[in-house]
Image (cartoon, rainbow, N blue to C red; front, side, top):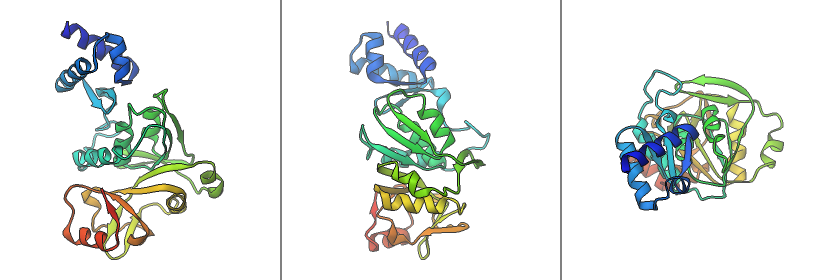
Length: 253
């Protein structure tokens, strides 16, 4: 019975891509604990990926989705994304930026119903748009291919009009670098106006930083450290940076 049930579940997930656990319980007429055990068994066989509240087909995995290159610090970025996920509640409105950490966050969001999401991540928009439980908007602009991800970047001349349309409970972005003395950095100048407006107009604004971003400066400066209230970071960061963040009274997750 378990083998047959696992096949039914796998085929259904492969067909739909993103499936809430309640839907799988109805499909198999089994309890929550039974379906969870089935999903665990399928994941251990490498056939699906479990997500909070559901599951996703292995073919949806981000690693090597757009590129043959291995994503730097992929496991660490997934842990960062999971920290971000723990802050999000059903029914919220979100902005999610571009970059591999943001893309992984979009993967982790599968299974959380009733979200309104605006993003500049092409992969994230493609993935999230398959969920009928949420609404996804891809912010317009030119499409750029960077290391292992695609993003839209615009000059956003009507920036105030764009931002005024939306009420974001939470905004999550990742950047190209952080310097203890000079602040946060981006590679593309066109993103500055958008991100600064989001800092002012989101209820909660978070920057996600993986370990390779520390001590790195990019082309343009977004803002000094003290302008950001919340960071989502790896479990281990350089002592100098932790001390500076604490001095500036920045919340660290």
